[in-house]
Amino acid sequence: MKIGFIKSIKNDKRVPIVVESAKKLIEIGHELFGEQDSGTFAGILDPQYEELGVKMLSRADVLKQSDIILTVDSIHLNEYTELAENKVLIGMFKPITNRDGSHAALAHKITVFSLNMLPRSSRAQGMDVLSSQATAAGYKAVLHAALLLPRFFPMFMTAAGTIRPAKVLILGAGVAGLQAVATARKLGAQVEAFDVRTAAGEEVRSLGATFIEVEGANEDAASGGYAVEQSDDYKQKQMELVQKHAVKADIVITTAKIPGGIAPILITKETVGKMKRGSVIIDLASANGGNCEVVVDNQEIDYNGVKVVGNSNFPSELPEDASRMFGNNMVNFIHLLTSKENNLVINFDDDIIRETCVAHHGEVISTRLKKLLNIK
Image (cartoon, rainbow, N blue to C red):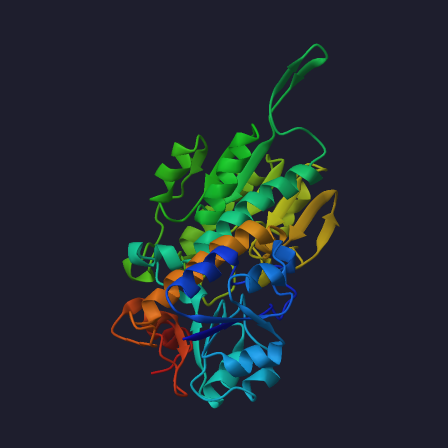
């Protein structure tokens, strides 16, 4: 297959294929094309790709010559009109929020696979970009918070007195949350974590943190491991308990998202107003509306002395390792999508292929996406 990779349309510093992943694809017989300078921020110059046999071309030529096009996110709307029918686009397409892109892909019969739609299963782990990139997000969020906090993370016993450890509250104990827990603990903080999924409690405790549990959570086995919408009664109990712990925290990191929906409000304006001056809130769900009521996406604001940071794209700030993980996810997905003879094989009986397919021959394929869009 002729496989091309291109730059992000959102100035993301990551690249979908690094040198190691390019080598793997070339060794099994694929032909690779790359957009010029696409790997610069990840520390990869064009000659490093070219030494492997990758042809570094203009963006337009990559789109024209490739059968499969790899990107971190999507492509520009006008580029859909330039693509031949049945081209395959793979990236974190985010079809719920990228409605214009979804309509363009359907109208021009482009086949789109969105890896952020992967079902959460053991077989899909090697392709799970949400998990690999969430690892980077959780890690970077803690480091950023540490830089903003006007005090130490660990306890210090000094001749000048004892410095107590910082108190960190993590809301959402998925991959990003657990990485944030682990990183904050390594820095010496006193850490608490909350999640609606009771199974997350064991993982939180194994990292040395305290798990905050609210009884009565709705846990849907059919949700594929994602958090689901909760009852009003549960939300009220959750809100009261979370606010109680938040006002005592030095740092709050929020990671909770509802697939296809608006992120739940976990930190109210009133709670932010009661937090200590100098406290820090890092909201990783800001692009989906935010878990903090006062957060502004892609901005750092001061709210009564509390620093509130809206950043859903911390992985872009770790472009080398984030790209390396992303590239491995891409290679594993391409293996699933191609035969031993390197021909494209789209088998919709495979739940991974079916649920990640946003568009194919002008139709929405993913059953979960159909449900979210109310398509029968």
